[in-house]
Image (cartoon, rainbow, N blue to C red; front, side):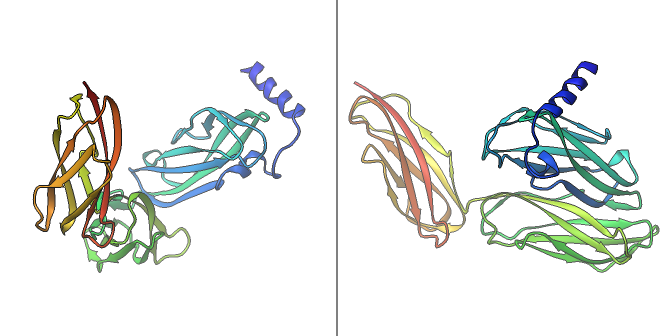
Length: 324
């Protein structure tokens, strides 16, 4: 340990300064994250992105923390100029009550030895409880508008004044407070907009309390938005077939509402696809046929086109091998 510390000191003295006055910490997208008021119990998670905006390689060695209630996760390695990596942090709210700030020290050894300091903070409150630590939608289909709820209870006299979400794709509603034997209880409901894009999304909902000072509660929100059209399986691979002999496999195309399949493009005649009927329905069976014309492997992409107005087509990867 002494030898390693001496190496850090010598390295710091020999390498010229790089970047802004606050060193390599300036390369992070932010240098702190405040979870706000949190109940005792949930695991809090956030991420910091470090982008190499210099003309030299950066290399991360490790990360350490000033308190065991936070666990950092980082993949050691080189970050080339223009590239980025992520430092993840998990905070265990069971290990503190009241205000807590923890420093994460990320150790670099290129272009110089330096520990960049970033921090996470939270205010653990044992007078708050939630029926669900997060607003987790799970998987939803594009174009739908589901909702999830959590009940926030206060053992003290705290009252909610408003709630806001950092995303415009989420609408919030709070019920009037209900008096319980130990305090007040509210139900918070988050409803997704049907316009939310496809992908994995996460954001924060902030509940503001009437009293001043440290008066915000953070509730994370997560959702995985699937396309309006989905094909199962997502790719079709045929067993080795003889030249000139067609082989058929069925697939399923699902939508959020009834639709018709109007055309299938691609395949160059080697692969074709035909729906089993032309009725409007939310689920279609489509027969994909592989008719090899020559020996070898063939990979194509079929575009299945429907009469849905928005996102009305889906791609299907097909692969086949032919022998004589």
